[in-house]
Image (cartoon, rainbow, N blue to C red; front, side):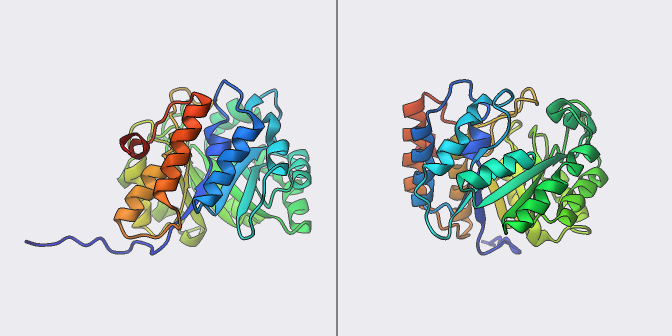
Length: 302
């Protein structure tokens, strides 16, 4: 019997947990501050090293994130762990720093129409807004992560040219972002498309500075993660229980569940530092306590 060995896989993958922010932001019911802090501290205890805890956007647009400052300030922060926040502008960054964020993130879209629908400005104008954010972050010695949304499709424009993704990614990198997270916001990408995107992007951004952020609308996210691992990407954004969606992309389902990714990585012999059983217990308890739908296949099976 012949054996098949998959080569070129990383020995370790860093999971960036986006559930408390990207996962919860689309939930209609308000999740209490103490439930959010319990979730975040449980994630850290399970071995997650990087958690996106909230965002400092207008509560008018994202009501769920209105208590992000209270959540951040109320955490028992552990050394060596990253507690990040999404900050779309200078005011957001100032509030995040005041609340104790150890890292922040900014975002741009690869789709012009999505940018207009999402934040009411062009891609170029949205990126220009970050100049002041990057300047203050640099002065405060705060690392900035960059998100690019709609990298493999837009709910308004359809296919998005890889050149547009590359242009926004390189701009964010040149501005000072240490890492670029590629978001398949509507979850339409397939493995071959994903690999072609990475192949093109690495002409402009080192693969060591790329991360994958895939939604699972068409059930392709886990396969896409495996595809980017083979291309050298070793940072993956996931959301506990598969929570999430996109308020500006109708039909987009949640992020890929953290538990499902960790289960796959364990099976590949790739280290994450995360205790899967502990993660599953936390996921099921949080969904139960907050009447949320559990979307993780692994947690449901377990």
